[in-house]
Figure (cartoon, helix red, strand yellow):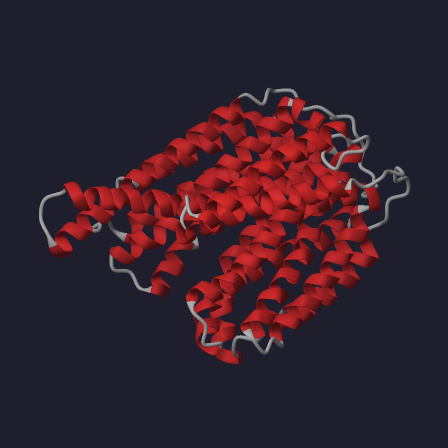
Length: 472
């Protein structure tokens, strides 16, 4: 096997662990509530602690990767993730499990923040898109097989097995990565910006907590106002600090590159729309009378399509560039979301599935070329922070998408309950469906904005002459 593909397989093994674990744990949430005799608000922190820590540390990890080397951080991430998985599996109380999940996220973030940087440094520009496409495929595999795999483990071996399964995977991945990923030879001696890292963490953690829990604690309540204030103040302070720091954690000059800034904004909008759809569709299917198992099978149409399309779109982007593919992919996503808004409770399974396939096709076209253009626009010595920014946009988009989907649906559903004629279940069904349709239309509009931001990135991709460092 070519050396660069050995490196790629090691990265993919680490990449698949995060999304696989996330989707498996989501399936286990009701079981965890029953086992620990905890309410859903408490159990939700099993996922929330993971998401907050993961999203808030990605920028810091990206910068550390540029300073210390991507191999070191990737291997450390695999060790931390695997060890934390064991701690999750032996947790005697829900509070211990929540803390162990936070530690698990710290490990997953290390791998996630530097994986695209390792791939970009391994493959030449003419093969980068294809390689990043395989990385996107690994994420799609994790998300698509996670629910059924998690259900099988829960039924056969109990809830602890969903964490213990990471031990053999993590150990195998660690020793394989250690043997094939080379270290960096010429790292620049740079100073870390601890104040910038702290302010960035405070900004992202408070923002994501406000977005995720705002509806529960009250958007304008004292706690909500406090989180919002901390988020705004820490963001302003972060920008000031990064402008005056001699060696900032995040070089703001990167955003003067149109391809970098437009690609990251497009990523944010795409994931907002994507997770609004992921949040809304199960509610529609439930209202249409589908069982939990049927809903899980129907929803796999989307990630499976992405799994098939992402490597192909990545390879195409190496030949024709990212502009047409990413812009066209965002347009297809918008069309698919509009078509989702035309469904009704009598729609057939086929009518639902082909729309999800179309949405998966559009996302598969969009994501890999977009990621390739962002990574290709950053200098070689800033691949880590470029990777961290891209991962942060993705995670913030996920949280925003779920929060917007939930909040907008609540508002529109209440509106239709007030204005539509009738009463009882007939009124509730009509209001429910109209509310969902409205939010699907708003989601389609967000993907149209994604198409526009993708379109303005420009045609020329910089750094085409940058040579790979690892895969030679």
